Length: 375
Image (cartoon, rainbow, N blue to C red):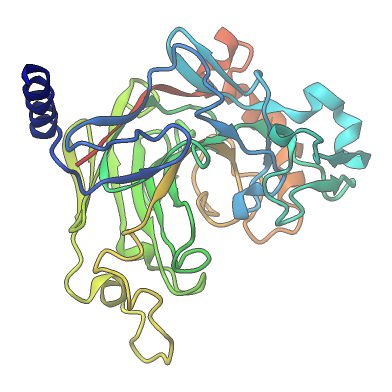
């Protein structure tokens, strides 16, 4: 009898301690029980846990025709002194300069961890020519797609942005299952993006290391993307490369709130018409609302996973043409040889990366920790 009473009391205490949460999770590192306020995913980067972080392996350029290719290599991703480093390097350091204009990169691997992760945009095999060189930069992009997906919660990533011309660091979230269709129908949450240029001006504003942004991408198809009404910028005259900052997201069934160092950057709380109405997608168009059977937060009412990467360049316009930079932008966004133009100007941008100083830490995105709590 006393034993039964003991277990009943223990169960009552456990039930009282664990308040149900609206957060849902999945993946190999997802907790079995989700309690409100509990830490449900974290990495302090005391070691590089490759069960938590899967490397992308692709030449595809992120859909933006960026100039890097991603692989699993400790030159480009490693843990040191409690921080994760995502560091750029030159492809020619591994294969030689001549390989860029005549070699073939085939990154189909035999082991599961070596498989090409994105075949789109010639992502698994390319051959270089004198007019279109192979991806001249190597870098890394890691994600929790297999280990941890979640819907609703509080995210905090303490990180230091890199410095170096045309570097493009990003910490962001993508949908686990594309419930509402292919991009951008199922959404994208950009926690933080920045640019590595130390002295780049556009329309009189410093848009390099002094600027960090958060963005939501959503829309019925790529040509209708509502990001322009969901893009927020904060400037820091010291530069986001000079110190670590805490990039934060509070994601609930009613709103998404972005903050930096506990200071709110943006609050997105759609009305009853949801993101369809907010984006104005139905105005003058005979198209279907992909979120009509979701909640008002759709597409941001499904599980997402975390991505961290360091890209370089690209032709999508993230680096606008006509910017003022100590070394002019060496390619135009409409150029069919943008990657080659960028590579041919390496004597101008490569010294700004300081790769030969302190193991290239200046040019590395450094992540102190990742923490995610249930609501």
